[in-house]
Amino acid sequence: MKIINLTFIIIVFLASCGQRVEKNTSLNSSIDSLTNKQVGEEENEELDTKELRKEYVSNYNEIEEMDTSFTDSEGKQIHIQTKYYCLFDNAIIVPKQYVEEDTTKTFTTHNYSQDIKIVIDKDTIFNKTITKADFADNLNPELRYYAVLMFPNFSYDKEKNLFDFGYSLTIPITDVGTGWRLVIDEKGNISKTNR
Image (cartoon, rainbow, N blue to C red; front, side, top):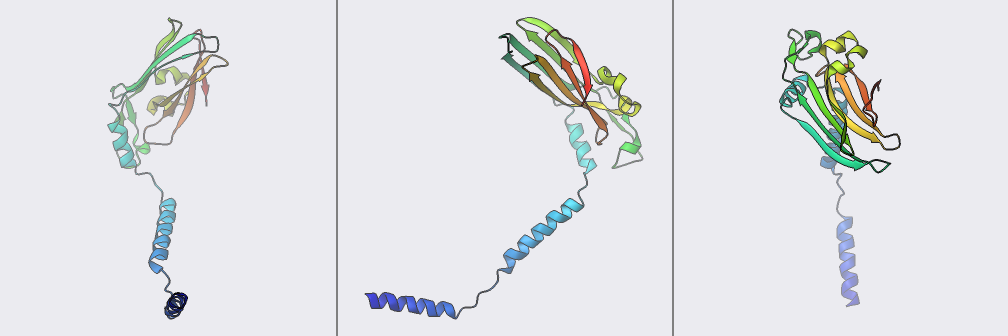
């Protein structure tokens, strides 16, 4: 039995010695082409503004709602409701210099707003609709006329009992804009800060 096993091992060894090892060029070329493609995409990375506009317009009907409850550091029950939505007012006419895919035409779009209601222990401390107008005094003219209220977000500072609502006031389909925070204390007082 030992002779058969040893003979079998010797035959396999001799047979494999005669074979040529070929470099797997298909795998290497696939990796090289993938790497070159990724490098090319990074070098030529440009936003497809037509697709961005199409996506932006398709979101007009989207409504973002939040309804959450929690307890503050003093044991008070807090209930927050928000609703972010498009006003469909055709009030924003973005000048052609901002419309990258066709600089010969303006882009007409809409303002957005967010309804915020904050209730602490069954007392409504804040109930207001936030719009771009709430920040207008702090905006440069280009943003005052062409920006919309975008990307709402919320956080709560439990130590200070502060409600922090963040926004971007941005000209649609551009990178022209600025971030703002609307901070509301437990008495309903508002302060605005630039991010």
